[in-house]
Amino acid sequence: MSGTAKVKPPRNNAEWARNTEKRLNQTEHPTSQRIGDWVLSTHPSTGDLIASNVNGGSIILAGKPVPSDDADAVATQGQPFIKVQREQNQQGNRGSTVLVLWDSLIYQTEEWGFVPTGTDIVIPEDGLYLCTYHLAFLNASNVTNKAVFLINGVVKMAQEYDPHNDTSWYQAMYLAEPFPLNAGDIISCGAFVSGSGTFDFGSPSPDPEARTSMSLLKLAVD
Image (cartoon, rainbow, N blue to C red):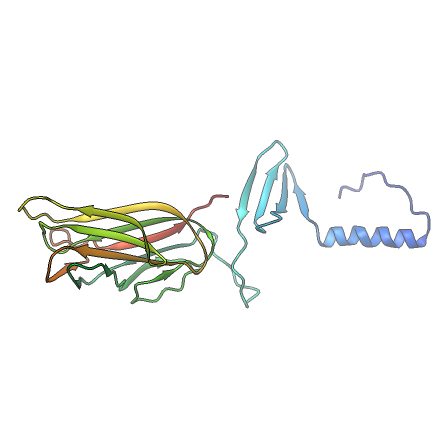
């Protein structure tokens, strides 16, 4: 690239033509590019754009964007993220797990496309995701309450509370854990209260702004 490399002169016109074509192809379609102390290249498996320093060490500048029919579409530079919430209190029957019907979208990057209202969030691309779930019951209770986080209908996180006495408590639960997920996986959250009759969840009566919510963030890890 510098023009100072020593090369053998071509022995004939055919060899000159082949060498010239090879140099042109390398210039038009380089596998790497030197800029000062940095070399830009792409990961052979993922297609991520990588910057490597001549003194050692590399960083990922950008991940491969989701394919688009629009060649000029610009993908977000952040990690895929979504947060959904239950604004209005939801009622369910005691004795069985009730899926949270998300009625509000707080934020999402363009990969998701979730439109309220719904119980299922579909993972847009493979990766390691930090999954968080906050469940808040409306009324005080002295029976068993439980929060569950499901991946493809299977409980992967759960928290249960049983006061073991006659005193009623306002109960809220927080779950958080990273999970490797694949594009197309379905995420849902549930609430459970033992006994008979109905129960309500969404916001606790003492703190109505502390609403039930769930968020998913794809982590920037190799």
